[in-house]
Length: 162
Image (cartoon, rainbow, N blue to C red):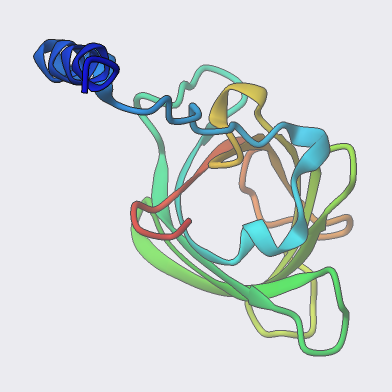
């Protein structure tokens, strides 16, 4: 019985410690690095801001909207989806197809009619965004004189789509 008393004292001492000392160590959330970004991480809803390369910034976008990416049924490792965004004077809708490479590079083709390419998006997964942010440039497709300027973009994964 004398052997149990020290064990009982240790148990009581442990119960008296602050709760922070009693909690088990939980690992910190991991941050997806651009080189580890998988195409499946594109799936879901992304919020969009676009602004001109010349004289603009992301805090005052010229266009805002959203992209919804889903698995591309014909090309494994790629995505397709829909784009809806505001522009000065009207709203635009388009179909998109794209992918992300092993190095975290992002590529997207945009088409209003599903046949003719209207714009090309090139960017990268940001290291600070933990797989939840893409940044780059949207340019009119070659031969498309749409009159739109070269635009920078930021895509941020919508809350709830992890």
